[in-house]
Image 1 (tube, one colour):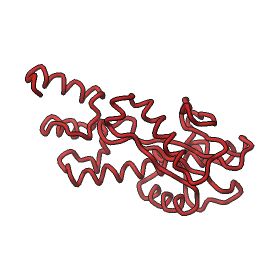
Image 2: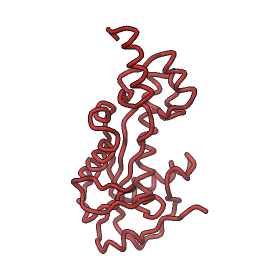
Image 3: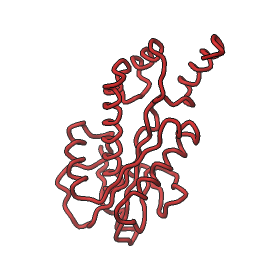
Length: 210
């Protein structure tokens, strides 16, 4: 049974301006990790669209929700690039993207509800495991993060159609791995991720000038 998020976690903080924060794109082999922060101006409203964990929604549901959220909340998105992911690792890059998203909000939140089990060091709030299934603000942030990242990958796919990023979003599907084997990698790949790192190591062993 699908869990339906509510405003209870927000109300329980005792604060008026509570930002829900979530990210998308920790697992892919390429592209940025994207985070979003969402503040609902009021907690006594009836939300007329489906808002839940973005992974439990169809593409059409997410698109409808995205439009409503961006028109009726205070929101911001931010990202960390593949280079930054390689430099600081994917966990720290995810936390950094979350901090950047909150810092971009037009209204500073009193408190943040962050999906997961780790709080970004520079934010005030609490982490909630499966927060996108419990908090409407976090669920809304998960939708904005995923929709934004999916669009980034679709845009990149027009430049690099051979990888199928518009369909796999950069995740290591069998087709994607075969494309990497055939066409190699480019600047959008995360060189610290195992399949990419191993490819670079193998190529370097065969050709020291790789």
